[in-house]
Amino acid sequence: MSIFLIAEIGINHNGNLKIAKQMISYAKEAGFDAVKFQKRSIEKVYTKEFLDSPRESPWGKTQREQKMGLEFTEKNYDEIDSFCKTKNILWSASAWDVGSQKFLRKYNLKFNKVASPMMGNFPLLKEVANEKKKTFISTGMCDLKEIDKVVNLFRENDCEFELMHCVSTYPMKEEDANLNVIETLRKRYKCNVGYSGHESSLLKVGIIAATLGATSIERHITLDRAMYGSDQAASISCDSLKSFVNSVRAVKDILGDGKKKIIKNEEPIRNKLRINKEIN
Image 1 (tube, rainbow, N blue to C red):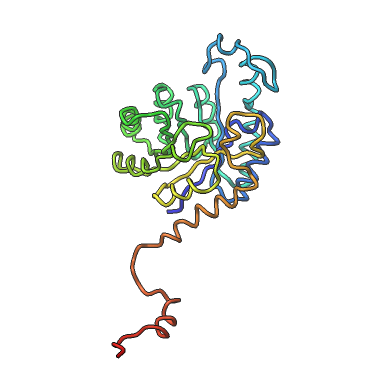
Image 2 (cartoon, rainbow, N blue to C red):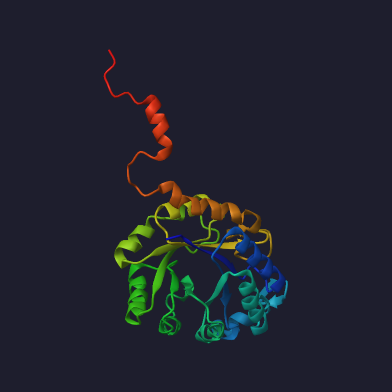
């Protein structure tokens, strides 16, 4: 089974549909299987007090203006859906509230994604599980007891899922990756386990995750890591995506099937160099 690669656009588009389409194109050209966004109903996810609080941004001087500036409209998502179809690449979005999850149903998406901050939002989790659609579940900021509850919910609803090991720091330090958790989760839950990364480095962590058997990898992408936004520094620049994809996908071939045998290319070397008798 080939590793499933998700390019996390998230909110790195900065509310600009042209930028989003550029990133979709780069992801497709590089060989990603899917792109992913975030969908939030701002007035439901955040309190009025928080939204009224100050925050300087390209869109204004309050948290509300900043959050609203990053959100796409229904018309925008219609265009994203159409554009992804023309590019023949899957897309989805992490919903942050029940209304957003219901909104996404319009597009008949092939998979759902639960973001780490939503692991305690059981009304939303139940809404997702009730769809009985393949769901990738990020486990950042969670302990095993919390993951137990979510896994039980999805199994009770007979909803296919794949856990994703995740460390929710932006960017994540490589020494915090703790990639052996991939095997811990696989053994505990008897399911496929992927990796959702926020490291600033390009290849090392992703290649190791693939080597440890991650069945999916999600990485944030950006046009420019110097762009405005809290996730940009934890993202792969689009001009490096092909290198990332090629390196991660090469892991399977490099590891091989584990069967010790004489390969075809060894045979002429064996015939030339092999000594089958003792030399006095």
